[in-house]
Length: 352
Image (tube, rainbow, N blue to C red; front, side, top):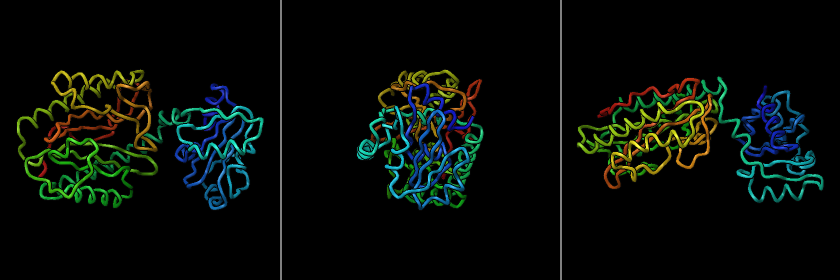
């Protein structure tokens, strides 16, 4: 069953006649189109792809034969609206208000536009074998860059220099960064989403290092925390706590486990150690065509894990003004648990 066929089944289950897919990541997932202006209409028996004249040849190369491709017009909305009928769902989480207003003005009286949530994202959350191997390749490339960075050393370099050099290495290896790398030493490590600064990394501190690669359309995400020499007892105790909580969280990953259940495992361990207030983010998130997608592992998550999900597992402890530790693996949910795509050791590694 193709992705469009799977979506058509979901469309029918939601008592819709069609779904208007406007988000470009979702368009790529469904139709394979990588241009910057495209949309799809998917009905029970309809697969219609739209783009403008700039991308006609690209669409011929990329969009499969199951899709009808009407002759491209400069303005897509009237053309798309003209093919709509009945109850038409739209991606209310992604479609701008201005876009919806234009669509409503162009739609006929026989069209009822219905907010449909994230139906395509629900399909995207379960990866097929080819997607998993692409993500695995991106994760392996990220591991290679980490090894290169470890060999090159951290101490004496600025956070920004390490981050920029890592980005350049990712590109040298044929990928793009899936997000701007985080390199945060000492007190900066207490900021979960720190931006690298022109601060020289010193000896004897912890450095939170978070990066990922975008390769063949799919992302990876991995975090390690390194030491740049001997660290004090507090730093070592926090590291060992996070390491222990992360290992326990991994063991909780399995089909049918809820995002809340997995999140609760490291959170309880960290709370019992007196650092509950120092773990403020979720335990993980899905990764695929985007570096942040479903399912979520968090206290507020309604998601349930399924075989084929790819998620991060990344508890952390952040002591304001002092230090931070985060350890993150990228894993695939399999029938009897998980497959870890991140290959770097997780015991505290000292990097010169």
